[in-house]
Image (cartoon, rainbow, N blue to C red; front, top):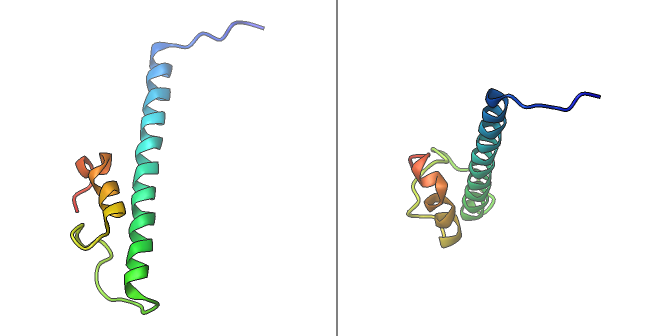
Length: 76
């Protein structure tokens, strides 16, 4: 069986895919936490308006997500 030799472009593609995966995980984590907080604030009532409000009304735990690497990627 021949030895597997990676070309430079293959290494770059794998690194890029890993970085994109991490970014997506950060976004999903932030949105999950934001949904949890907003549902808690609604208290079982269905709300109207945009779910992406501002970070001001979010508790400290959610603000940590917003200030993390997402702060530079996502405008809140």
